[in-house]
Length: 120
Image (cartoon, rainbow, N blue to C red; front, side, top):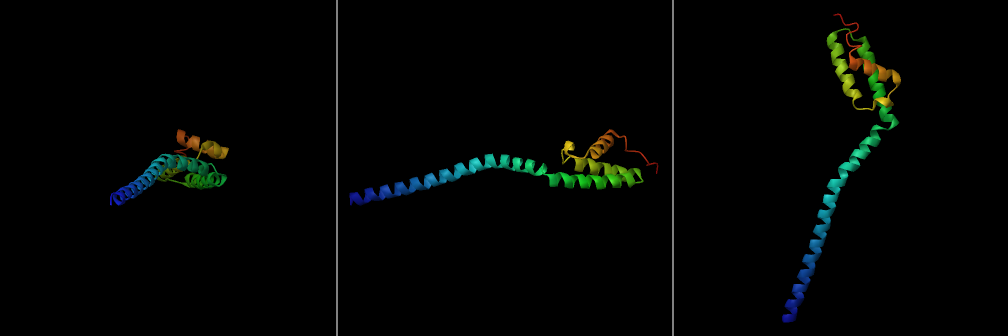
């Protein structure tokens, strides 16, 4: 009888130990994952934003907005488009854009293009 009790305590102890090890591994993995995952996502986002297709797509959007800005006739239209252009331009590295677009953005930020043809 004493041997059965002793064996039962050993089995229960081993089961508790195994469950504890499993829970410890899961907790360790989750702690590591929560620390490492944001870094991986940041790297993935950085790689994505530097792909030629992403930069080309942003350049196309900015070029279309530039045309809309140049065709705008009222100050309100230009103000709205200026904000849209600068917001869109903030999502891409300027040095990756064509030089004509870079100079347009620079002039737009400095206010050199802002009030041209907007006397209405």
